[in-house]
Image: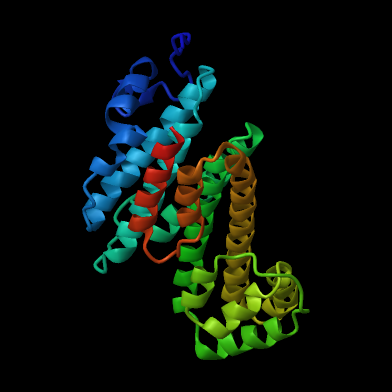
Amino acid sequence: RNQPKPEICKQNSKFGDLHCTSMKIDLENRAGIENFSSITMDRSSQGAHVILQEAEKLRTYAECLKKAKFDYKEANFIAALKYLLGASLLEMDNTEKVEGEKMRHVEAYHTAAKLSESCASQYEMSQEMAAAALAYKCMEVACMRVAYDKSLGQQSGEWNELQNIVQMTPPGESPSSSASDVDSFNHQGVIDKFAKTKRGLSHAARNLLPVAQSQPNIKPLLDFTETMNLAMEASAKSQNAFRAIAVTSEESQDEELVSAIKKVVDFSFHDVEALIRMIQLAMKVLS
């Protein structure tokens, strides 16, 4: 398929030390999905920051592709995967120290979540529901990792307050989050109550708001609740996208695709590296 040469991106004229006209070849050689598994999983803050730098370069590259009228969705999604991986490696490094402008793992997770959401939305618009399911799963996992981090810093009294507020949540619909995530999360009683209704988290957030205004120490719980709400919404969208491709794939008898996507959608948020490898496999099946 012939495509016009991309023009130099005026806003971001360079991708690292490469002009935009050279970036497409660079992506194919060292940042394409085929080569993603060759990245060394260096479990140190230094290795994580290298991956995060690659993610930022890919995101800049995707912007250049977009301006040049190229398909930029894959580059953006690979960038999101790199942010997710880099955040996970930083989180695992117990000696993590932040110097200068280096990212903390929570910030990297936030970036991964936002970029994944953007990718998922673009995939939905182009009716690429399998890729949308994968992107929404990445958003879910990134948000769950942030929520998990927030939960570790809360005192038992604050969790009791959240427990009481969640108990006021009206009973409702079926869970919208992955059962594996809910069952394995800390403070399981609170999370289980959240999962009993799709509206439970937003309801709890509304109940928490006046409490947070009068008691500043409750503000972290509000942040936690909002983050969990985003995770649950992303999970629901991922499952909806999967159901859409399951019906289509059933008609075409594409069992391998359905199986690969289902493994990702059903996976827990605890092992980010394993999740990314499963996503790689699913994307290879898609291609």
